[in-house]
Image 1 (tube, rainbow, N blue to C red):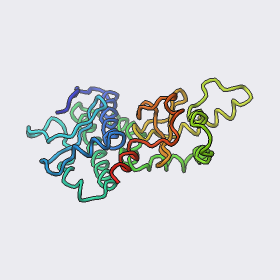
Image 2: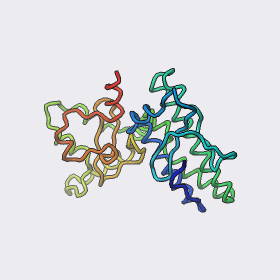
Image 3: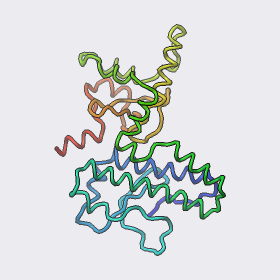
Image 4: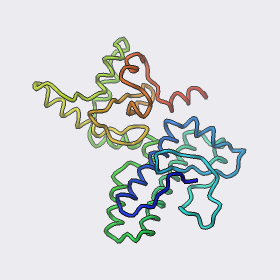
Length: 251
């Protein structure tokens, strides 16, 4: 059930395991939300959402062995699917996913005899990342905006719709070799972007990566996370992220 499971021995290995599982869960609740929604059929038995160490996810029945090899995620998430607003249901699953991630990480810590210093270091590494809940609800982005007072995004959004997408996409790619006369401004822009989190994987902005912003929810994404290249972005008049596209399709 837990494909790719390995036995972490160090704090760094446990954290890598945590990162992989976290990335898988965020994909299920954002970019892969349509597939996740369909798999959580209320007519099926008790289902769980598992994040895997290889950054994938799966919806499956709970482990049959007692006690299980790892702590189990929330049971029966599919039963609540049609009894709640989709946004509220995804938020609930995200909260339980955060609890499961922490329990799994510290299960490993206990299993491999981490001392107080190791446990504290592991927690601090995890705590530096936004939670799955914060990524799914957009709270992580709001918190970063409040801290850095980023205004660059709203400026980009106020551009005329008559401008080509090509010129807009250029604003979403940090210049790797800025001109000397604009070096100070470019550094300030990189600092602002550095506080931005990808709406799919939750990782920070990097100046050497292509990013694109959803015109509906205004979340930013790595191009690779939503399968959009700079060349393709030039021909998109209004970009809608997978989550917004799925919501409009079901409306």
